[in-house]
Structure formats: C-alpha cells, structure tokens
Length: 138
Image 1 (cartoon, rainbow, N blue to C red):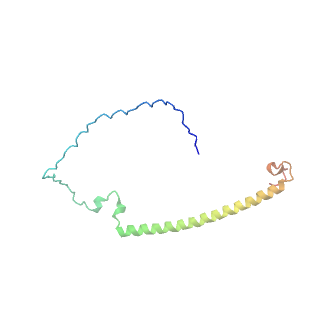
Image 2: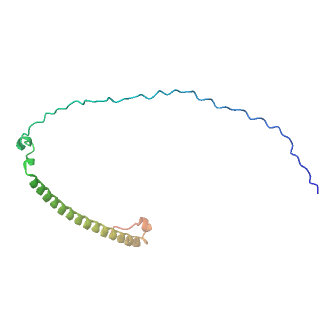
Image 3: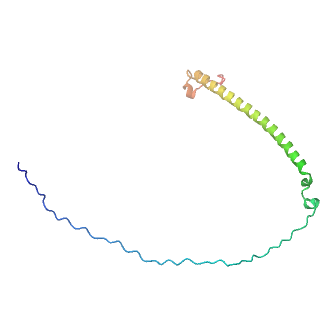
C-alpha cells in the first residue's frame, strides 16, 4: 500500500527583532559605620533635693476632704455606691414598665388601624383617603 506523500509549502517568516535589556548602573553602597563602646563608662551622679514632710494639714490645706481617714472615705464611697445601685435598679424597673406600656400602646394602635381600615372601605376614597364627615369620631 502506497501512502501519498505530502509536503507543506515553504514560507519565509520575518525574523524577530533582537532586544537586549539595558544594563543596570553600578552603585557603590557606603560601608556601615563602625562603633566601639568605651571600656569604662562613668555615669553622672544625680542628686535630688527631697523636701521634708510638711504634715497632712499643711499638705492638704486646699483639700480638707483628704484629711478624713481612709477607712471613713472608703465607707462613704461604699454607701454612695449602694444608694446608686438602688436608684439604678428602680430606674430599670421603671424603664421596663415604660417599654411594656409602649408595647401595649403599639398593639392598640394596630387594632385601631385595622378597625379604621374596615370602616373606611365603604367610604368615598376607600381606606387610603377615607373621606368622612365630622361626626365619624376617628
């Protein structure tokens, strides 16, 4: 069996242009500075003038509330905190009651809207405009 032979036509493709990347310029980095610690180091001696205690009365003359013993100030703060907690608890109860009352009012408003829509269905304008006389009551 003879196979037919096939040869592709010869084509001359244009040659690709050559491209060379530019070379990077040489940059010389400066050398890192050298550091050597001294073998001995004498720190300056600091001196502080500490004033002598002037006494509590003189020290707190502008703030006499600080002359009260610490235990009494702590007890006073605890008593004030207890009073605050009681008032805060009372306020939370009142806020809950107000939220419950608002929820009840919103439920009643929905009931009113439903009944008003029902009453306005047969009036001129329907439930959207609801033209009614002065004696309608709503």
